Length: 72
Image (cartoon, rainbow, N blue to C red):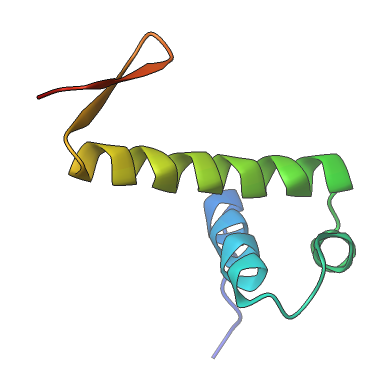
C-alpha cells in the first residue's frame, strides 16, 4: 500500500495534537515538523483562541468587534 500525501491542514492538525500531548516542547515539535518557532507558537495561539471562543459561545457570550459581551 503506497504512502498517502498529507495536506497542510493535516500537518497542522497533527502538530496541534502533538502539542496537546505535552510530550515535546514547542521547539522540539517545530524541529520535528520543519517549521519556525514563530509559526509553531502561532499555531498554538490560534488553537487556544479558537477553543476559548467556543467556550464563550457555549456560555452565552458573543464576540463582537473584538469585545466579549454577555448576550443575556
